[in-house]
Amino acid sequence: MPQSPDSPPDSGGFVRATEMFRTELLAHCYRMLGSVDEVEDLVQETYLRAWRSYDGFQGRSSVRVWLYRIATNACLTALERRGRRPLPSGLGAPSEDAEAPLAMAGSDVSWLQPLPDAFVAGGSPDTADPAAVVAARESLRLAVVASLQYLPPRQRAVLILRDVLDLPTSEVGQVLDMSEAAVKSALQRARGRIAEAAPDADQVTEPTEPEQRALLEKYMSAFEQADISGLEKVLRQDAVLEMTPSRTWFSGLVTCTAYLAKVMGRPGDWLMTPTRANGQPAAGAYYRGADGTYRAYGIAVLTVADGAIARITVFGDASLFDAFGLPQTREAEA
Image (cartoon, rainbow, N blue to C red; front, side, top):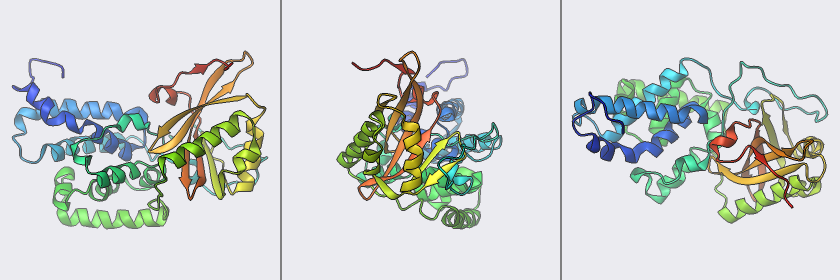
């Protein structure tokens, strides 16, 4: 922690009291914003604000609630400057024509981004209980975070603090400067809106790690070998494919595979690197250029359900590779 002339009298005490919450605050800011680009800066801002006011804190609430108050209000301020971050499936109906040109989004759309699992590895003492760990991981899944984007910022904050973090209504009120009655009213509206906008968002399966790895390996192998029949075998009949920055998305095995068959190209056009995002199996996709170098294309996040791939969400943004600790280029493998 940096030192300054106005530092609190016990900087070491501040670090011991607050540092254990850094990971869960990062997850909280991601749920609020849906942006991996912003969360680290907001958590850093939270700690800077807390450090500056630590000597006046005086234990009027728990340290955890105090930090969540600062972080949540920082997120609400950030959300005043922009709208929600959607996925393509949140912008309209699926396309039924795999041959039609993709409808690319303009600069007015800021997409939801995936969160590398490495950002929230380890957790905190408050998530040491195995059931709490599972609940925290499920609340970071893409479907859940995407559904939160349908809520106005303050309703979003209430729902996350109450239903995800399980804070008592009174503590949620402390965080947001709201009465308990106002918290209960906002929570009811938020739950209703989530159920209406994304009724299946909370119906998340928890496949085993071996099952996830096996399906990810089959997905990557099919792409690298341009094996569309191999990919068909691991997709559900109701599979969904969406790819930012395009507004176009597809639903159903026939339409999805018809489009994927076009983009697969020839064997060796793609290289895949396994990773994880939002508690789900994922792959960094590299496309081979004319010079033979594979360049970062995007992060594909897989949603697994009932022993098959139910959804492929491709984030076509090479800048995400830095957050995932992946190189921008790869050489052809011998």
